[in-house]
Image (cartoon, rainbow, N blue to C red; front, side, top):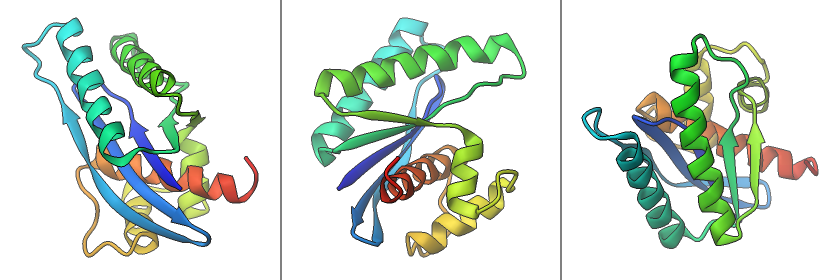
Length: 159
């Protein structure tokens, strides 16, 4: 099963693509979809949509896992991330791909076994779980891989 993990953002959206084979996980790709601050909101959302379409066409995921943020430090970041998340969920819906949402707490629990794990700790666990030669970077891509791993582990538990 191929899982596309997404860490939503307007400026930077992280993605991680993994393959789940019984009890083994394999990293197929990870990175970011970047937009320019000089672009308008509709332009940025179109870039995100086009990037997601390319990823889905290339990897044909069977499920999409998206980080779900319930708490924002300020409204200025909440609205753009919510817009990006809408585009992400729409992209999955248009392709008929089921989308599962996971909170940062769920992701950290699934990956590191501790809901308050530090970012570096999660990155190290992702590196180990996916047999990566180095820590996954940037943070957005590492987070997206963690969301995909969380989804894979949730599938094992029937979630």
